[in-house]
Length: 428
Image 1 (tube, rainbow, N blue to C red):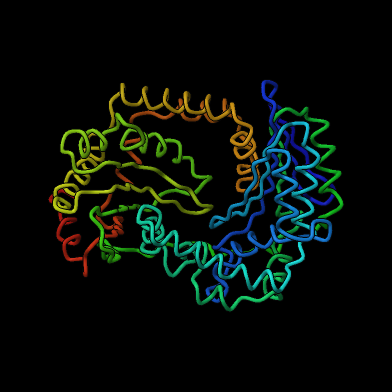
Image 2 (image 1 turned 90 degrees about the horizontal axis):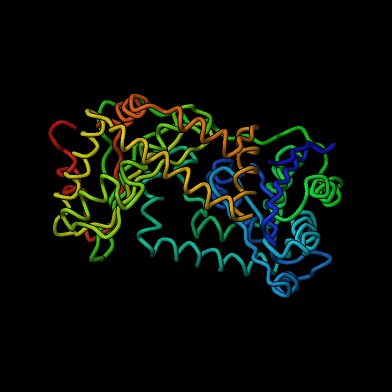
């Protein structure tokens, strides 16, 4: 069970007690990410996240922040996505007030020191280089570029070197002040804390810090252009022994009722070591080490993707097998045994997930921020259990269409001709 309350400044507070743990996790989530940016400031949300760790009036620099948290064995970090920015601290439950004080101090009192800002530009550029040098990470970015540009959903969350190096303090503080306000904020605690005490502490540390503000947060809704044929494969040249591919189809937004059938479809197709793609492509033909299918939802769209690291000498064979599995799913659907096993897989995974305070707080806070609703695990399982084999067949027929197919690849290729040829499979 959990407790939820909206404070007088419109900050939403959620507390989820876990009796059998000695930990607590504090998560503060703002509804802003890279899709709220314009091209000339692409990456600013992520940059602001970094600057929150660079010192406050009370804790004047990064060392002061890290020493205080390290001194109690806490784990802490932050993250930026296309739609949210989150800050979290996980610690011994006895250090709950320290965690709340630390996060609220960083978010409300960060100095955005000019010297630190200029130094951090180099750090962020190196972070971008790290991701782009890793094909497994970068191929996802390329797929979203292929699927969503010129929409901000198709941009790199971190921006690029040229834009980052031009950013300044005034622009950063202005963007922060526009998006970091009470109505756009959810604060959550999960772990060894009771509901009333948790709500009281959130009000103590966040009730006065954030003014009640009419939301000014805006993003451009994504509208997919009509298409009659598959887009050109997007290929990034890199001298590699293994080819990373990411095949994507436009999926469903976070409030679309079809996401439950789609999540089960992803599990059956490529979510486990007994899934169809894993058995066919890896076990029976030895064409890859890893292959997986997943569905990611945004507010108003989604991506159903199949990512794999493939043997470059047999890339055409691998892509042919993947497409034939998609065609089989589209034409013949799933068996009752597969559907039952996928539902039990979700149930088991959720049981493990909800033993960790970090996962629990993320579950509740993310839902509240993005949808305004907060399903319990039991309520989600009810929705998943209601999914039928025909529901899965319906989404497979809707998703897996040739005109809806995108492909990104990283490997030793100067053009995309091999991939264009490989995608022209009869029946797809």
